[in-house]
Amino acid sequence: VVFLADGSAPVVEVGQRAGSLGYARYCQTGLTNAYLGVGLDSFGTFASNEPTCNTGAGSRSPNSVVIRGSGNRNQGYALITNQVVRKSFVATGVDARPQVGATGMQHVTLALSPIGLLSVTISFFDTNEQVNAISQFNLSNVPGQAALPETLRIGVAGATGGLSAVNEISRLSVRIGE
Image (tube, rainbow, N blue to C red; front, side, top):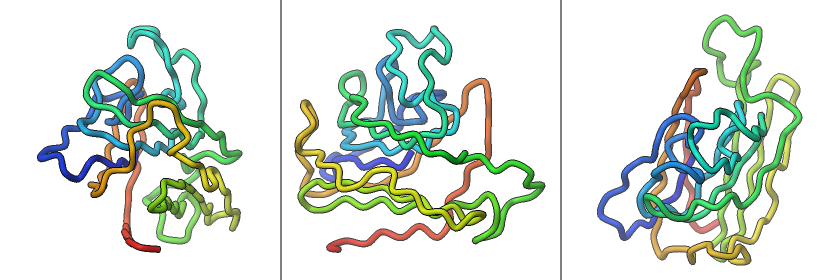
């Protein structure tokens, strides 16, 4: 999960493991002072709104870009949108860490405008396919979503439950004012 949190808050504490991916979903304590969580969910439980954490995978949505809204500890984190992509985020048939531009690598662009328009684009290097998973989604129209804070903290969280996978981030860049 790539998350954005209120930059004026003194501390950010990550959320729970498993399907919460370190951010939060309905049944678990979440990231403090959270504004937005963008999950690339290969297993599919980040999109689940199961009423308890003990129900297993429940309504999974594998290979999804999942957007969860603002929240703080035990409140919020609404499922804003969930877009299934046709291709898996997990590289199969790759014996070692993939090199940049090789099979198993994806380039993800997350763009948030100053007025709250969110876009998420994924480029899959093995097929040269580009997927516009979320395009100009207006967060200010989401009921219960906090207003865009004056300053933001960006972070990355990940978690595992009964299954695990290696997910790496490299060449992260943050640009302001575009």
